[in-house]
Length: 142
Image 1 (tube, one colour):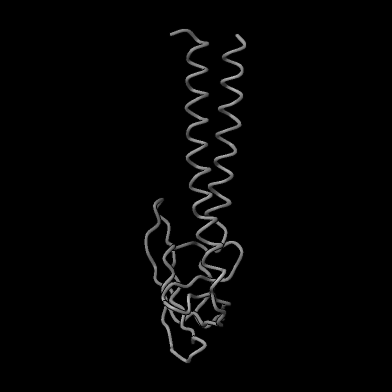
Image 2 (cartoon, rainbow, N blue to C red):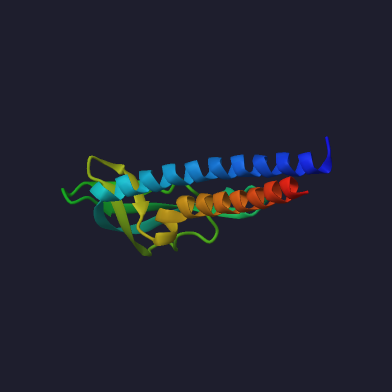
């Protein structure tokens, strides 16, 4: 295969990967918007930070948050995605969003926590699409 063919093939592969990232970003965007349409607000308190080992050897933390639903139920919710730095320290209060039909489906109401996946995946999609398009155009122009 010629250098031109390789550039076009790699470019189209990047475009395909960009499309997959874009589709995943769209999925997470739609899921977050659907959640926020019906979510109720609560103020929670971090009662514990669960430590775990990160993928690169560092320590990450998942917050355990206690909050009360509008109908008075006390919920203990554990953050599903560990991070470093943590969402806060023990005793800190956080604004929460939760599903009134299933209060264990909750999220910390910070922009970075609610929109991280759509923004990250969308950004990766745009990056791969742009690089792929440039490689494909350069390959076909040779």
